[in-house]
Length: 269
Picture 1 (cartoon, helix red, strand yellow):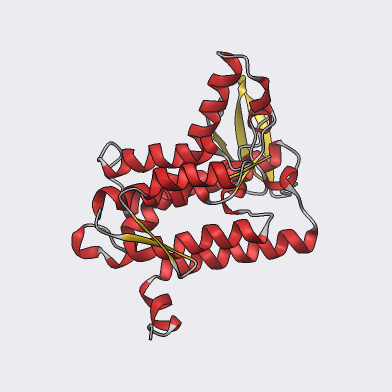
Picture 2 (picture 1 turned 90 degrees about the vertical axis):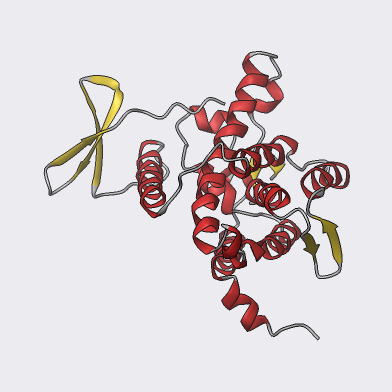
């Protein structure tokens, strides 16, 4: 007989919170009758300045089956939080989840850009990606390098050797679910290897909080600039160079200038 769920949740606090967030977002999407176009990430949206979609697309799911599959895999991968004795643990998990969300989204846009501009495949201009699979595939990859003897359990009865899980799952999902985003999953694997091999390193609480702060700022500014949401306390105006926006907090008189983000570049991620 397995351990009570309560103890599992206590041992995987970050994973449990992320599953709760994704589930709550799914419920909200269903209640508001949102679709892929409302929360998904595409190359066309990105070049129009909808950078906020890198975040919303990662945590959003339209289909309940998609949500259950991703969250089941994520729950199994939450074992990372219990491996503090081998250099992983809760802090490592939170820091690098942040990295996986941002870099996998940026990388898939870069792949789209290459395919569109270099190979003239216009199909990828409007492909809409949604789902947490980029991060799931990233953690599969990290765990396959750090703990190759581990297993990935899906739905409580399907078990895969973690050392082969990233590419097994990549091929499996591409065959079983044709609309699954091959490039989205591949981007998670690439970023996962970069983290596991130490190419991306040095993340600590300072850098994680700094990164989170910039993510929130870019998220809010891009929402404002794209006209999706009007933040009354925020006014954006050009300073010297029209390509460099400034952010003014009304009432305080303070203005912050930042360089514009140039991210170059309907699938289920």
